[in-house]
Length: 428
Image (cartoon, rainbow, N blue to C red):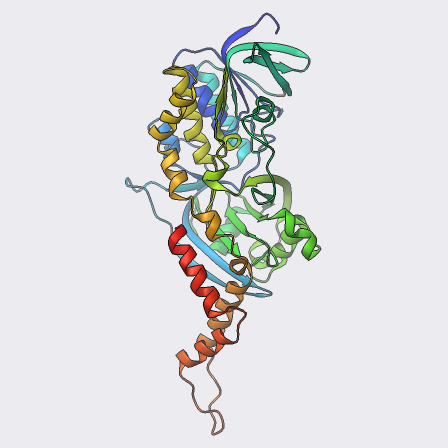
């Protein structure tokens, strides 16, 4: 390895790294794509939902070829308070050509497929490699150290995830602190295909994406459920700093969600075949570092902060693909400078997406969103559907006064609701 030299080394064979390696290899550059997993995707974790437009930005028609588990045809949002729940469901939007806007995927399959595309284009894919650090000469990154040996290149691209050790080594990012990251935990629960389609009311190849609020015992966070071909992904994303306050753990919250009366019947008879945990950036645009490059070095994907928690959905994989594409284009164009990389990020539309969502962290910071509002919504839903027994001593009551009384007796004060509404208007 000490004698080898290549144009670009990409560290991390997730969507960002593979998108970068694929684009470079197709342009004729020599590329080595390394990953610490025994196969690409073996170490990668996400909820499991991919918005497909990014694939077509990488290559027209690629979205039609992605190894999807199911096409998302239903969007659901659930509000939970104790054992009670209310569910809002709507038909999932489609893209302009009526193709699915999003699909569910398993990372082990998706990542191996994308790395395979890069390999077919000419990239060398090397899994099972632990990168120990960077090789630098006169302040310039000239390669990596892996398993005690050196591998040199003109550019190193770090696509090694949220807590990028390589980007920290260069000094362009710092370790995340409280409020910047959440802990995500996920179970994959195996179920027969027919059971999934019957219980969720979908057809063959169709799926559901469900987000839930109120399942974190008042902590910032929420739950998610995605249907795969023969399994269901169920997870919790929660602020780790509040767990001591409730004497809880992410896994405990996930077990409570799995046992909830609104969820348990959907998973009855299923077998947990996978458990995983992952750090998730929470700060949106503020999490993108001031500098994304250093001499001979670039950072991309979640390592560069390109992930969004919008409350009702988390976008990571599609933004990672766009950032990896932008990194490759910068290398192929004017070189991996900060200016060229930023220009390519603008060109893919990624930075516009990040800016559009910059108000979400402030809006989602209100504690009431995760406990008081779900409780109030369920109390008001109960009043809306309550029909009092007739009798001389129970005169009928109009619905609006009952709802108003429910609001006044809740933990939500009018001034708090007005303030939260104002923050939502300003932020969103």
